[in-house]
Structures are given as structure tokens and as C-alpha cells.
Length: 353
Image 1: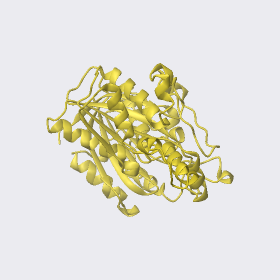
Image 2: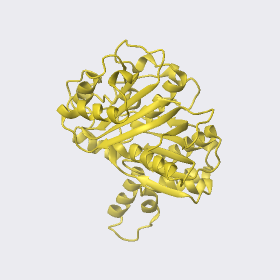
Image 3: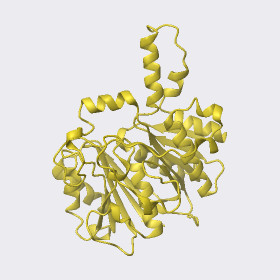
Image 4: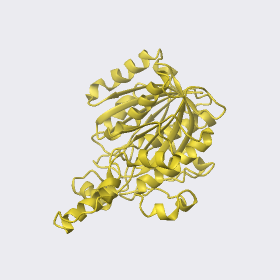
């Protein structure tokens, strides 16, 4: 499959990633259970009457996609592809509460219509009046990676020249309560979280939206070349090294050819062992982590992809992301490795454009 270019990157996250030089102000807060995204002034982008009817996922995605398209200099993409793990959860909860409160009678369909997972891609298309290919992937932590794969296929098959690709997930009060009950979220007594050497299970939960424009041609604004992606649902810990090694060999690369590896350490002791195992194979690479900046959520890999794009373009690694002191002055290849609670492992290879 031919490589495609990431020609723009935009992100709304726990950090203030919409502002310029955001990497200088990256902050961590390991002492809270839930991290909230920094909201932009939505009124600058969305009419007030529409804002009231939009869930947070739709609002974040609308703004992030606007930034991505503007940076790429594109008014209407040839396709819109969105990945999400939980969809518009807030409206789902409102609809279910309506069902209970009204004894399953006299229900208005509004919350149900707005709660479907493809609402995000649909609302972006409506705003742009774009009638092109529109698709949503719901594959837990590999939703963005499947979206990127689809975009690659669309471009390689000649169906599209520029594709808007994104991923978004929001938090909801009830879901966070359930995550606390089943210990998905770290217990308060286990805080502050130690992301790299955790002895306890559970994570600090986050949220956000990341959007990119993938194109067939390299432009002046290009961040990176998307070389390859690989996804596997289940992986035995002892096969982690061979999973990565086979992926690199398929792309005619050796471990020493990778300048930086971005790992999804989440502070969950049980599942982080995969990343610890992966680290052993990269003795000469800069090892980075990011979920202490974004929190863990289904599409957190959108934040790491956004950070990788900026690292490649600016040739600078923020110190707050570094696991050890190995620093690189010339960064050409970045490998991203992510999973959620030990399932849906993904590898993404980016090369400097």
C-alpha cells in the first residue's frame, strides 16, 4: 500500500493543544481520577442555537475538524471518516433516563437520534454541506487506526485525494461512576498515579478529539508520512517483541531505525507490562509516553498521533514525554504502540514528511 501524508493535525484535549507553542505548557495532574478537556470558545465556531443541542463530542469534533481543514487549506474533503469508542454517551444517558422516567412511554426521539455513534461524522458533513463518503468506526481503542486504514484505502484506490480523519470520546457522569465501581478508574487511595512504575490497577480517565487531513500529495504544511498500521485484538505478552519486530521487518526497518517510540503507559499495572516488554527492544531509541498528559480513553491514540506529528515537524521532543534521557536531534521515524486494558493492540509508523 502506498504511503499517504498527514497534511494537518488538530486536537482538543486535557492540554490547551489548540494554542500555538502548546508544547511549552504541557502539565500533568496525577492526583485526580478524571481529567476534563480544555474547552475552546465554542460560540466562535458554532451558532449558539446549535450549541445547546450538541453533545460535547460533537462540539469538540466540530471545532477540531475546522482547525484541521483550515490548516490544510481545504474547504470540503473527499471523505469524512471518524473513529469513536463510546460515541455521544451524554445523549445516550439522557435517552435511557427518559425511558426510565417516562415508563417507556411518550418518548421524544431527539436524544436517541443524537446519541448514535455516527452523529459526529454526520454533523461535520452537515456543517460543510459535504455529500461525500462518510463513515464511522467503533472499534474501542483502535477506532482511529481503523479510520486511518480506511483513509489510506480511499486514497490508494483513487476514490479520494484528501480525507478528513478524526477520533473523539467524551465523559459522562454515570459511565464514570460505573468505571469507579469496576476499578477501571484508579482508587483515590492509589493516587497520585505512577504511570511508569505502577503497582496498582486502574487508570486516570480523560477525553478529547483529534482530527487530521490525510492527502495523496505532500504539501508545505505536511507533518508526516503515514507508512503503515497494524492492529491485533489479542496479544500474548511474550509475543510483544515479535509482533513489533515483524511489523518493522514488513516495512524494511530495524529497531535501530526507529528514532522515537511513543508508548501508551496508563498507570494500570496489569496491562502496562506490554509497554515494558516493548521498551526492551529499543535500546537506542528515544522512549516516550503520553497518557499522563491526556488521560486514558478509547481514542487516546489521537493525542499521541497529534504529538508525533508535531515532534516530526518541529524536530523537538517535549521533556515531559521522555521516559529516559536518550535525546534525538534528527527524528525521521516514529513508532506508536497503543492498547486499552491489554486488548486491541495497534502499531502506527510515521515518517518525517
